[in-house]
Amino acid sequence: MRLYTPTRDKLIAEIPLFCKIRPLARPRMRYHVSGVYQPLENQEELRSELSRYAPLRIDYPVLIDTFIQLAAPKRTRLLHPVGRTHGDEDNLRKALNDALIAQEILVDDALILGGQNSKAFGPESLALIRIFSVTAQHDEVTPLCSLSAPTKLAP
Image 1 (cartoon, rainbow, N blue to C red):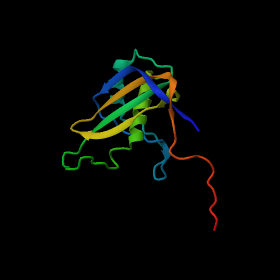
Image 2 (spheres, rainbow, N blue to C red; image 1 turned 45 degrees about the vertical axis):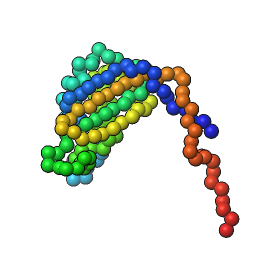
Image 3 (tube, one colour; image 1 turned 30 degrees about the horizontal axis):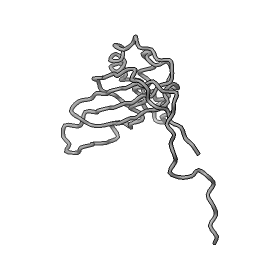
Image 4 (cartoon, rainbow, N blue to C red; image 1 turned 90 degrees about the horizontal axis):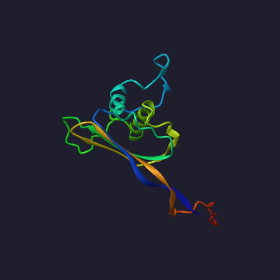
């Protein structure tokens, strides 16, 4: 069996952001509050940072790498003070992707084929977005396990 993965071709854009990235959870019903929770508030600072890159318009498949640094609490000795208030790595990435679409830098999030993500803690909040074009040539990946049906063992 062969699996193919998209390969990075050229760096299209490197976008540094010097603002707090807030996680963007999916909208969901809250039973103690009437209506649907829409997690779009607090995105204005992020969108204004991205407005500097508004002439950039991407309407083809890309790979996007995101490096997000959150401000560590002042009173901690932990190297990675992960907590519920810091947000999931995938929700932080979703906030960045949605902001790229809101600023019309990226036409549609369906054009994102993948990428690497990381979340770290440091003295201040910042992020780096790297957008790569995708080459037509793919790397072949050999799976470590077979995806065939499991065999039955004799009793």
